[in-house]
Amino acid sequence: MAIVRGEKPEEHRAVEDLLRRAYGREDEARLLASLRGSPDFVPQMSVVADLDGILTGYALFMKAVVAAENENYASLALVLLTVLPEYKLSGVAERLIRHSVERGRGLGLRLIFVIGEPRYFSMFGFRKASDLGLEAEFEVSGGSLQVLPLQNDLPERINGKVRYSKSIQPG
Image (cartoon, rainbow, N blue to C red; front, side, top):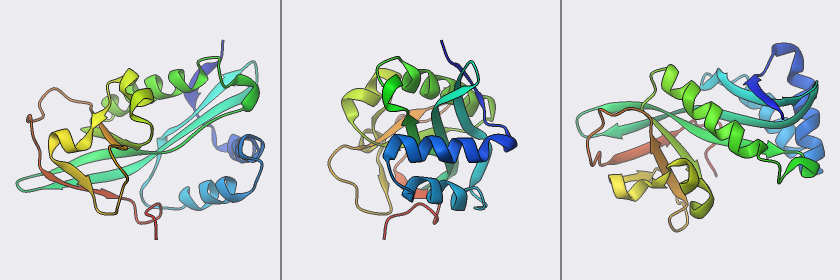
């Protein structure tokens, strides 16, 4: 079983190679290299799945902020979630997400956002962001913007805009 842990600086190239293998192209590796230079990069939220020295998966979360009427909420956005094809059904993605959620809580962050398949991410406690009165500053289809509260002190409805890092916003 793969161990999920923080990415080490000396593994940057190996993680970029993992992205190339997983996607069969350069785009995601280039994106990751540029995101590492962003002020919204959170090194503690760059995690790998390590199976006896072989990196089988990777997850990256970047800073996000919810701008609400009375308060701003320090948050995270899942930007990359990658598993090598030969490990796709082995639970690596699930372990990456669960580990990252606990890391986010440990950093005192309030919310995690993801744009993805609601049925999949609901397994981890994510729900439609609109249920909390939240929407992205850019267009997101259907109910694919989801949120996971990390702290118990959040109001039932927040009503605000999710501001993703400028380095990952579409358009």
